[in-house]
Amino acid sequence: MSRNNASRGTRPLEAVLLLFFLFAVVLPLVGMFSRLADPEVREVFGTEAFATACTNSLAVAAVTTVISVLAALLMSWVLCRTAIRGKGVFAVLLTVPMLVPSLAHGMSLVYLLGSNGILTNLLHGSWSIYGFPGIVMGSFLYSFPPAFLMLYDVMRYEDATPYQAADVLGIPKSSQFARITLPFLRRPLISAVFATFALVITDYGVPLMVGGKVTTLPVLMYQNAVGLLDFDTGAAIGFVLLIPAVIDFLVDVLARDRANARYVSRGFDLKPSTARDALGYVAAVLVTVALLLPIATFCTVAFVTKYPLDLTPTLANVGRAFTMGTGSYWANSLFIAIVVSILGTILAYLVAYITARAGGVSARLLHLASVTTLAVPGIVLGLSFALAFKGSPIYGTFFILILVNLVHFIASPYLMAYNSLSKVNRNLEAVGQTMGVGRARIVLDVLVPATADTIAEMFSFFFVNCMVTISAVSFLSTTLDMPLALLVTDLDAQRLVECSAFVSVLILVTNVVEKVAVAALRRHRHASTPVLQ
Image 1 (cartoon, rainbow, N blue to C red):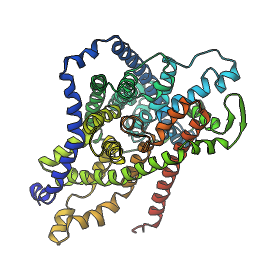
Image 2 (cartoon, rainbow, N blue to C red; image 1 turned 30 degrees about the vertical axis):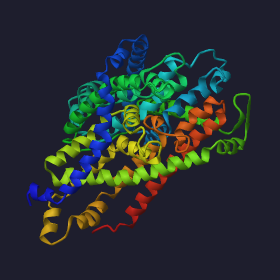
Image 3 (cartoon, rainbow, N blue to C red; image 1 turned 90 degrees about the vertical axis):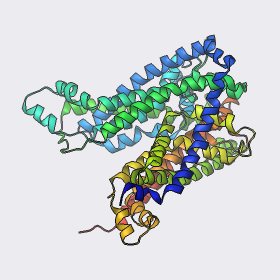
Image 4 (cartoon, one colour; image 1 turned 120 degrees about the vertical axis):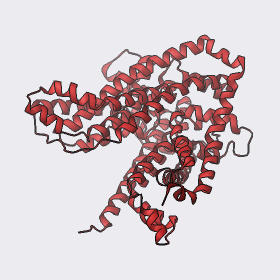
């Protein structure tokens, strides 16, 4: 069956999906950036506030990127090249910070290292967490897990054959790392650097909590667009924030195309080494503690009587938090996350089926539209939605929050499905047509079971990110449909720090429960699937 015949039956669906991306991505962005045609808007680029915020953002992003990527490289090496025990546990713990909003990372640093912080009081410290140091530390907590996953997922599939040949030739381990490991990781490292830089420079959660007098571009954009309703300034800053994200997208696409050709031919036979493994344990413990100590801090603050004056354990903060509306906002977040996870998984899977198996010009356009959403930061997408849909029936409703989250997070789940569906035998549709079996039956009875694990990962990705996101929804939510993550700053501003900490704990627990539930379902599925002899 030719490509043209294969794609003919999906053309109506392709047209609908292309219209969706045109409506939900292209038109809002074009509308926002069309404001740059106004000379008064372009004057924003010449203001002192913009220049200062731009310098601060570049400095913070550069320093944080170096620290996060080096730490991610170190931990990837420890988990892949040493014989320490508990590697699976460490790998999970290192990604826990992804389960809370960036606001919570900044808040936890205040509780831990602020002027009345727990560690500050214990050590009688006189340092200040606010400003550049605090933003870098909080941004590290926020950006390390993605950088670690990018390098770890590549390094653990590296072929051991070159290293075995190097051992035979007597090449020292340090030279092997410099001449084999680093060249192998060159493209993933470049991708991790650009991805981390783009992630940090577009985040406003951490700088908002610990920035003090140091204003970054996202904070300036947030203050003007949300606080002052100055959307022209927001559009100008949004254009600048789009630049590093677009560069990261281009680098990521090039690196992914080259990475797909790699295969493992032989795994590593790691023998115990006292010095190497001791170094591995020390590094793993130090990095894990650095990541989890702030999280443990807000988990502690959530259940004390009055931080920092009275640290007596209590559950009263739970009731106070729910009295302040935590329950309804939690329900909002759960509703948004579940709906986006279901609709997003279906949409991403349909698009991936067309692009991976049908082919054609429209399929290539769909692939481009899907992956390019990676290049749009949430804060930019949120402002573009606010400008495009303000005054429309969907503005201020759950529908627009669901739509913006779906568009914001669809790229990664789409790529998961695309990669999985590309590996399934491409002759299935031709065989089905010969036997009179329709596409829908092939998808539901063959492809969905074959890619069930990927579908579970897609659902989980949507859910977790919807629970922790603050960027896009901060421009679009109201007091009635506000997600739970945005309540962190509201309660903290009212000096209800214990309640604010409990909200962060509630988000963390919700995401952990979802992760455990999905993992349990996958284990049950594998256990109940008969093994062919």
